[in-house]
Amino acid sequence: MASLLEQYAGIVGEEVIEHLRQLANPLKDMKIVHVNSTREGGGVAEILNRLIPLKRELGIDANWEVISGEKKFYQCTKKMHNALQGNRDDIPDALLRSYERINKQNYEELKTKLVDADIVFIHDPQPVPLLDYCSARKGKWIWRCHIDVSHPYRPVWKYLRKFITGYNASIWSLAPFAQPLPHIQYLIAPSIDPLSEKNIDLSEEEIAVFLDEWGLDRKNPIITQVSRFDRFKDPIGVIVSYRLIKKYAPVQLVLAGGSASDDPEGMQVLKEVKAFAGNDPDIHILELPSNANRAINALQRGSDIIIQKSLREGFGLTVTEGLWKGKPVVAGDTGGIRLQVINHHNGFLINTPEGAALRIRYLLKHRDILETMGKKAHQFVLENFLITRHLREYLTLMVALMFGSEERIELKLSVS
Amino acid sequence: MDTDFKVMDCALIAISTGEQAQNLRELRDRLVTTHHGCIYYHFWGSLLRPRFDDPEYQNDFAIWASRSLHDKRLAEQLSLIDPSIYPNLDALRQEIVEVIEQNLYESEYVPWAKLGDQFYFNRSQIVVFDSGILVKDPEQLVGLINHLPLGSIFYHFIDARRRSKEGRNDFSLWLDRLGEKYKPLSQHLDVIDPYFTTLNELRREIDVVFHDYITGGA
Image (cartoon, rainbow over all chains, first blue to last red; front, side, top):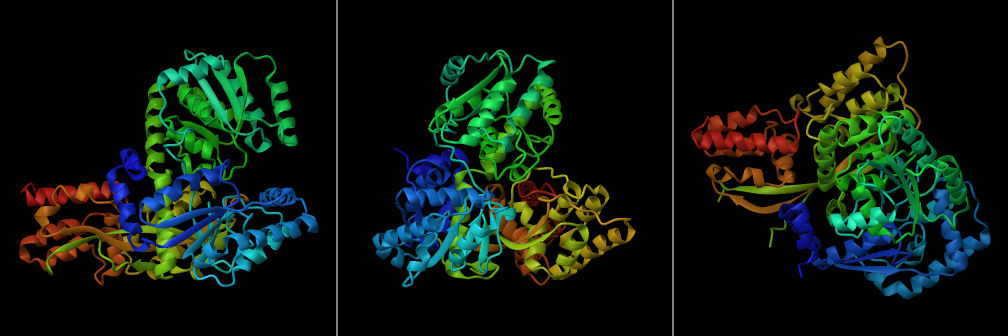
């Protein structure tokens, strides 16, 4: 079987993989440790599942460690996660003590690996205090923040900040997320993995099976929004847009999101969305389990246009996924969506349900433009938002950290 | 040998400076003092970042003026600033500040961006490494240029202007060292405008110049 790098070369081209090999040369045999709090589920685990084997193929001694805790620890980190995204919720002292104690316990287990590593990447807030316990560390420590921290709840940020300031560097997904800190702050945008279940090519037959299962008719246009049931994703606004389009074209609307059973606010939004949709047979509200990656893939591929009518968005990986499937994306003019959707090139940035309806009607009327935009959309993600670009930036950052802090770092090593 | 051309490659990583501007006056104030790397990043760095082949505006300041300040006039004026004609980044910085000050002077109010639409000042670190490609003579570059990584084009054609005293690209400097025979070729390369383009387009242009000259088309 082809190596991972060979598989990616088949998608992005040998030139891109060769570039990675050259860049990784000076990092050969370096000990790199990534630490997060879960091996499966969630975007961070998804990325690490790919990045670690890729780094190893490039000759880097990369390892992935996972910290574990008890109920109180996870309660605390869940609250932290929400607070960093702006939820005004104080964390009781008892939970914070548990958070620090669990980190100390995990440190004792990982001690040797962490002390000896040349570079340690700590992902998100869960393992942040590990650094404080590792006073004998030899390498550089980097905090990688995957969360939208543009408007953090200040008391919780202030608590975490005292741990984060000790790091040699931090990485943020977008410039607006970066917070004042006394170290260098790198910017690395998220990416998608073209070989994952959610993004891999599917046969027309498989797509048809899924669409049939959901009662969707491919003869009529399908407009899809994939996102959790959250007010910031404006699902009601999507339905308003759909009704404005429906007067002119026989469209079907799909609102697909994860099950909201463990999220009281999500359940409330879902209830409101269902009530607003009424009995319209052409509005399909799908509650898909979190591992329904192939189903989401088929849904995006089977759609004519992807909509992401967010009012506020971090990066918007569902936009990236839609573009990758060769679909124009009509999306809210906010956050990281602006990096991805370029008006008239691969979709449209909109501000209102009316704006979304207008652009979707335009695309449905001009099928040739829809097709052209779809092709450009795929190419744009290919060149900018795949995991190979993410890996390149990690490698660049590692080289920069290990070989100098200046603006320009010239590697003297010749290519082997 | 001294006459060989060693093709280098480079990769850029963005760094947040934490500085931001909410309105045009703040942008002007920050521009005066910000790290010169920010000027470089927001003018040249965009060539290595996501964008389509025909961007409406050529640098991040112009894009912000258009998108967030909704000031098309300013956007056009900022977009027309050609960074390749300034001897250094401070001279370029001065020109941007001039354009903004003129607009502030003529404007009845200070244009503001919505909350969340601030201008964020970034800079970058560039890592330069050997691509492993060694070119013996200009003839060898015919057909090869189109297969060079975009990082190599950036390094030898854009970044070179900052490194060389003459503000020229590496290919031209190399050709001049090879003697009179290649002077016309280096002159052709010198007149390629590296700014109002993309790296893909630039690579094609350089390839055509080499091809036409070496094969006698020019």
